[in-house]
View 1 (tube, rainbow, N blue to C red):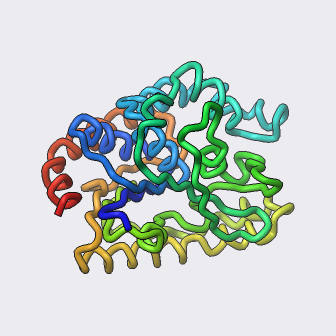
View 2 (spheres, rainbow, N blue to C red):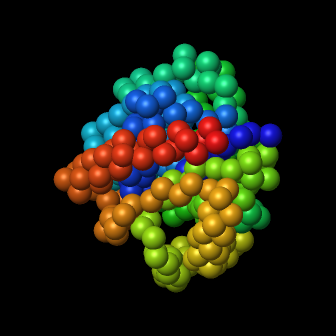
Length: 281
């Protein structure tokens, strides 16, 4: 059993909100025995466990408009709009490296949510934090359908975990967490709308993945209701933006992203003591 886990939603570059909260956690020595992340949440989780304060901020702010990050040229060259190989390779380990020494010292179970391309169902992978190489589980968790070709692990192709389980609080509790701190990247009252039908039609190779995307809004909205229920039971401490962020999944306005980060960092500092009390209670 884990006294208190940490659940990290994704959201693409909107995840800079989570980065701000986690940087405040790092500075205040707030740690968890169990962390589960989805998509950008998994990337944020890795930086948090490596105690790399400001790393996710620097990656997003420094590279969101870099052609190696997002480029239509990549579609022709690699069949990917997002160059995930570079993002989780050279950038993650050479240009702005994750602190692998701290990862090895972390006494934390780390889980990444992915979606199986063939089944369209969520699977839960646990990276070896002692690894000297890359973390394909984190890469797979953020492999956006349509934007990427997915990531192969153990003979299976995986895509973004947000397709099937965007807010994995239930998984955290099933894994043995008595309660959890949940960081969402949408404001209270948000309701997800159906996916664009025209975009869905471009996914031909994996029909069950397409069906998962088609039903994603229903699953997501149900998960929000579940989070609220668990919160009302006292088993979840929910952190989310105080107002609508007006930030798309691939937002590239550095001014807007910086403002979101500063908002979240300030919020994180303000609630740090309350989070400590909740984690230790």
